[in-house]
Image (cartoon, rainbow, N blue to C red):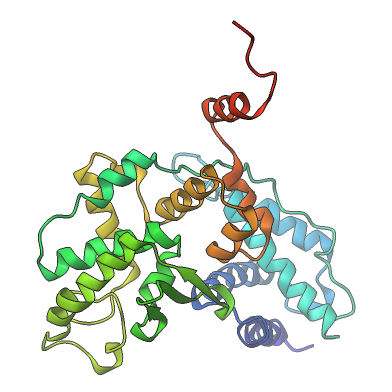
Length: 316
């Protein structure tokens, strides 16, 4: 095979991820970064022929990633980052073998490092209540910020889904929103009354004022969440809105858009929601992803046990 065969097959794999698997732009970019690093490692070893890459090369790459350190001698990549890189490498080799581009898959028996499973850091319901009242005033940006916070907590949608939301996907009369999630998969999510109220206020007043900005672009005409110039808001701007609101109620570093998603799921399960329903709401492909939210505090475990078990309490 010619020296550029590795680059050619990597390009074919990326096309497959985009067209066949329908990965979102952010996921596709992550695969691209990981596989560029893998290709550079292989070329540093003089390996340019995908058909001759062996299991030792893949194992060597994993060890290489785990050995990277910064100036302080600390590991450069967390176990989760190494695990993600291994997923990308295995996806590439599996694709090549399945398509008959190479004879074998050298990554088949290479496992990713174990990643400690952390418990999502959901906010207390009282903290959420404080947060959702932290933005005051009726200026266009204040109305937008309140609507965004209510939307993120009330629906549990991802920040990318909130950014990409269009007016045509909102049904405020029936209280539903159509969301395009990972892999361009669509789902319909209910809107709570508070989220509906905040969105109605923003869309009927604040958004119109932002849209009248001279800098607004026609292609953003259908975007729900707008920036100060009338264009579609960015992920970074959403982060800042959430962080600023958190700072007003002393949540600070604890808060992010994803924490609001965690909190939505955790609070629903705490109040008896079915796990499958929460899975559908969040757009998780696997229920095992949703199950991480079922972990409860010892105090809640005790309260539920005492309320439910007939012999939980001693007679007095």
